[in-house]
Each structure stands twice: as C-alpha cells, then as structure tokens.
Length: 292
Image (cartoon, rainbow, N blue to C red; front, top):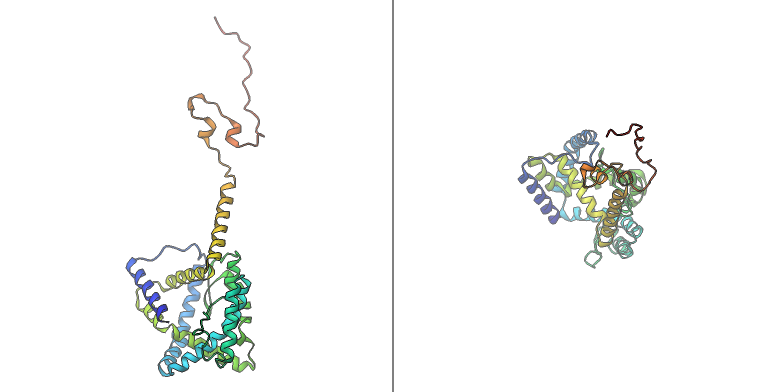
C-alpha cells in the first residue's frame, strides 16, 4: 500500500509540474458521456462511499481491516488462476490456485494470508486481461456508473468476471449484499489517502484517472516478456500490412522521370505493374507536306 501511495503521489507531482492539461486522448471518443458519468460517480462517492470509508478506517481496528482485505483478496485468487491458465501462464496459474487453497484452509477462509510469506506471489488477472493477451483491442475508454473506469473490452468481459467471483454465488442473498457493501467500503478505504492527495491537487481529476487507468491496464495486460513480444509482433504485422496497401496515388516525379523537359509519361511506372492502362493516343500523321 505504501508503494502504491508513493507511486500515486509521484505521478501527481509530475503532472503538477507540467502546468497544463494533456491534449484530447484518442482513446476517449466518448469523453462527453464519460465525464457526465464521472460527475455522477463523484457525487455518490462524496455523499456516501467516502464518508463511510473514512469512518471505517478511523474506527475499525487495523487487524480487522487487514483480515477483511485478505478475505476478499483471497477470493480473487481463484479467478486469477483460471485466467493465468487461459493465458498459457501455467506456473502463475498454479501459483494462484495454490494460494487460494492454502489461504482458504490454513489461513481460516483467507482471513490470514499465509501464502505470501511462503513465497506464493499474488497476481491479479481477469478476463479483460486475458482477451487483451490474445490480441483483442481494448476499444474506447468507458466510465461505468458506480463501477468506475473501464474500456469496451473490459466491460464486455465484466459479466464473466463477476460470475468468476465466488462471493457472487454466496447464499442467502442478504449476506451476499452485506459482503458487497463491506468490500466496497474496504476497497475505498484502502485508497483514501491517495484520493485525498488527488483532490487537493489543482488537476483535471477526470483526465488524471483516465490516463492512469489506461496505462495501468496496458501494463497489466503486457506484464511479461512473452505477452510483450506478442504485442510487438502484432504491431509490426499491422505496420507491414498498412505499408503494403496501395495508396492509389501517382508519384509524378517517378512517372515523368528525372528529365522533366521530356514531357513523356511512363504509364506503367505511374500506375504500377497492372499494365491495364492503354497507352496514350498518338497524334495522327499530318497530310500536309512540310514546306520547303
């Protein structure tokens, strides 16, 4: 958490030093709609979620907060393991599933995180990252009501991600809803200091959150050498494809050659190798004899 806050503060300071807002982001063609949803989410946060998170952080013992965070974090390890396996990351996938098994049993349903000290590193993989790993583009940035920043690709994957969360199958429903509320408050409390720093800075918070989210998602999709190589290979293939497409333009310098005074046009050279273009018509010979 300290590392996250330090990184957040460093980015905020760097943006402040630039002294100006960033230009329009081509990945955000729905900016007008997204800003309206962002305003709605911000109103809900200020009225309900942030006050609840502040009370939770100030009056709940730290070991209880740690236990709640560990419990819900443990639930994400199972779906993370499935997505790692779907990305052909066998070792990471087995690591996540082992984490889930250890913490769910010896860690008292995940309240205690015994897997991390044992050397089992935590990953955070979801279906949106899996689709991105296999080449599905992220699409435009999208701000979702209540849920916050996303992209078109991640939004399409969201129903599966919600289904892959074991808590979404918790019965009875009233216990499930209580858990959803506690989880939301706990997650909001974990970024309370960072959000206060952002609010105090004279920034366009919408742009800051959007750009930070897109950069973070890209770094999580291409989080190892193999995924980076696949991404770079796709970019090279896309660039080669664009270079091979005929532009339909005629290079007049190549058509006329270096001797511009000759006035002759090489139609084959001008229009490519198709050779379908008929040669330019030749003037009929004059019937008049030249005067001597």
